[in-house]
Figure 1 (cartoon, rainbow, N blue to C red):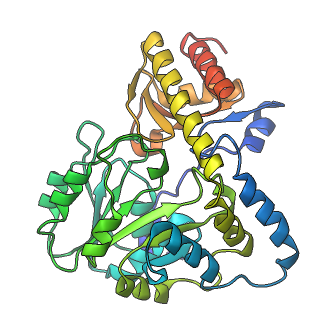
Figure 2 (figure 1 turned 90 degrees about the vertical axis):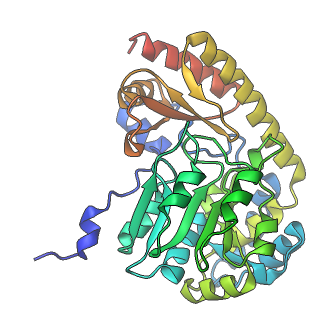
Figure 3 (figure 1 turned 180 degrees about the vertical axis):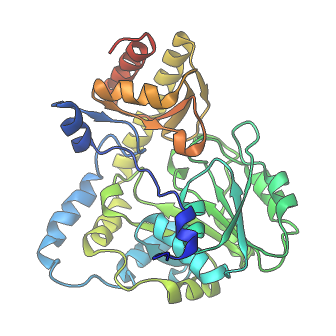
Length: 364
């Protein structure tokens, strides 16, 4: 007799990047550099850190369940109404809320075959069917996705920029895709990495929300603002869409410290500018170094790079671990010969290149 629901047995749990402390314990290391989970190498926003310290004495109280002050700050920051916003325990929870709210048990979602794993995992846990479409040149193939849409499809999830490839679809491509979408079909644009964009044709997607009731944008404070450990993300959508999602949201889902940190982080322009500078300069250094080593990579508009190491990526990942450097293996994504590296500080990037060279040369 099965204890769990039948579909649970078909779910492969999300494999997160290895924690620093675990790597230290496993290999007896004193210092470990983690370049696996696309975190901010500069730490959290200093303004956010100060706000957390000020908020600490109040943690005996439940947080504001509706995130009033954070919504107020965000609405001004984005030039939107508070009714356009819903907050989540990271964007992961918002993915769960979207599927619970809008996708019936006999309906499906569509996404790419190599993309953020949570779209598929959450859908499978909830017993919803997932249709995947192959990437084209490591990029979402919107034309092929559109052809796969049928009467049972309820939502399309697009990671833009895409994790783990670092590629993006342009404003014109999204505009063309939205045209003629079936009525009642949701388009979810997950923009977790949009803060690192350095191209001119990335979608200004808020305009799509203003024009269409079926568009939802996901954003996060985890990456550029350095608040991954506090778990706070938000969705932007038409007020009627947000109102429905609120019915599926758990109360007190964004904790008190996360709300305080996010409010303060929105004012930390200098930290955001410094973060972008570190990422863009680090990316240029890594590109140049990888070319010199003859290692192929996928050009990225994010704070990470996907590399083709030309051999079993899991073995390369394990080899680098022994040197105290954590990268992301790509086995769960079906990319056998690849690893993904987060762009770190200058010293971290230099260390990564030295260790990668040693491992590929067979040193241990």
